[in-house]
Length: 177
Length: 177
Length: 177
Image (cartoon, rainbow over all chains, first blue to last red; front, top):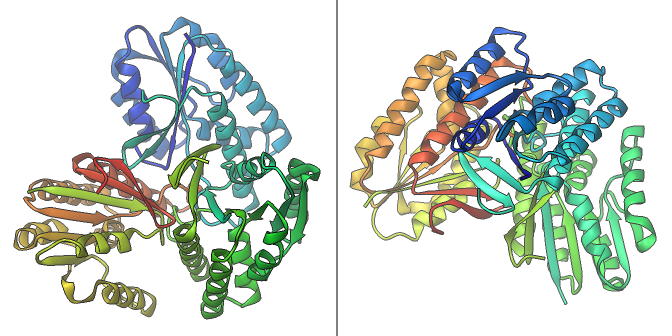
């Protein structure tokens, strides 16, 4: 049965931990789609910490760009799919498409369409990045806009949306998980 | 009958779309007070997109500075007034008054007093801008402070306050709209 | 009886005012632990404004670093202790320990352990700082991370957590205060 949950919030608000521990409590096979491809020590350390937290219960798939294909390919083989996270994926697309927002919008559409077709449970982590002062840098402004639009589109088709604040999960759409 | 609603949230969280679609569902004449005066292509594009979204149901009034006067002048002629947005208005005041926070505070008081006297329905859009790292720039810090104070003052007299997150509206004061 | 409340939110969202006015309504002796040591005119002005707001109902203790000791020492002598704020304390620790995150983590553990042992009412103010664009500056990224982890740890042992938005208090853990 299709059940899509979006977990959003600020950095270090417990989003990933919540998604992983929620998935751990489910029976059956689990898959973790990581969008972060560590390219420096800081990121590698984060990725390793997250992997330790997940333990051996999850298959891990690394997919920095083709998230629509990855979801479509793997979700039916697992009871639950964790995607962590959409904001890092957006960052990867900005890099790959050299900030071409037309191409990035097309990727968002493709992803949301694929997500809307899943037949199993998927929990996706994203970030709130637009609650600060307007950045001076045009790229950062465009990134905030695209990330916000992506979050809106995913939230619109999600069965549940959770806002994570200081490790507390607030149910803002759907029933309490 | 007086009914004031404040819609706040991060950038691209669906605040304006919500305010406009809420107003569209009301009978009678509608007015949209735009505080943004487009001075470059990026802003003009945003303004045009917003205008397309509104369609022909709204009269549009552009008022970058004298928001108290604009509200007082127009609200009684319409069933509902949309103000979009207070944060851009704050930015305009910072520019006009060269960051003189005394003058800006006086403008805020004048506006809140005028708003408190309306006799019809008004829905105002604002932004959360103070949930990031403290900016190094003093002007940005002052802007966050003034925007936060303005939001508090408007929320205090509002009948409803809505926090918009990833396109989901959370009722944080008053009854569900 | 132990009752720990964490008040979090963006800058100028009414966090401190709420904590102080909540404490004012309690009978008995009150103490205010200020972590901010004003080192310039901007901070001194903020501190003075906050002190005026509190009036003479509170004893004030200034403690920029040893927050675990301060809590342990004072809380049992007062009916309610206000701590304002944890984010400034984090900033002080970053300065004192020259960004050594190991030492800062140890201070966080010490503080959370001390807080968990209180036998009276404590209300703590903190800040959400991780809802913006990823800062380019590594120190700012580490600060966001540590502040987020601290907030999570305090929220986990708190009886109540309140998110303050535009002066509106949202109960996100525990009963309405």
